Image (tube, rainbow, N blue to C red; front, side, top):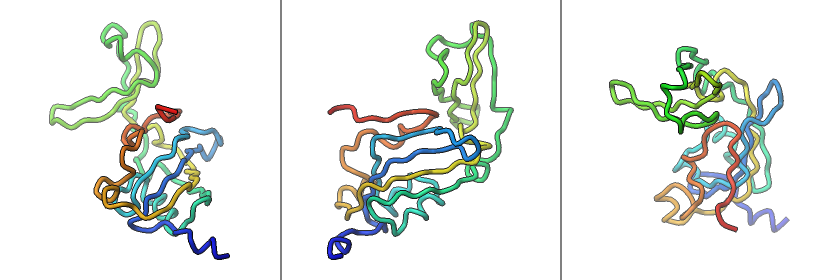
Amino acid sequence: MAEMAMEDPVSNGKLVELTYKVIDAKTKSILTEVEYPIGYVHGVNEILAPPVTAEIEGKLPGDVIEVPIDCNELFGPRDESLVVTDHIDNVPEEYREVGTSILMENDEGKTKTFIVTRVDDKSVTIDGNNPLSGREVIFKLDILTVRDATEEEMSIGGPVGADPDISDIVGKDQHVKPISH
């Protein structure tokens, strides 16, 4: 029992490392799986959706939690006007591969990421909807580490020298692995 007292529950100021899967609630297929642990400082750098962050609060290393998320609430419903098909000759070659992210800018300078969802001999289709829009999913998180964050970790919101950067973890079916080992 004494060992349990040594473990800190997730709370503000704790460095939390976890892996997660996003599972389609209807088909049970895995939409995204992060195999390389991601880390963040709870209460400082909220990298996860608010309902997921709320569920993690108070959990311990080794806990596995499942959080159902209605992505219509999180990202809004799918907007078919954000799905655009163009003749392949109008699309630069580097954007002719399914899964490629394209950062677009409108006349007001606002940016939005579009993902190439279909390519054939004549056309390329891009979609500006979040890949989870219109879906009900389950976030399955495996909490690996919970400890006091250092001052430096507090200032940057996560582990020092962490690879990969959480902002790089986007897109469907992306598997993130350590770069060196």
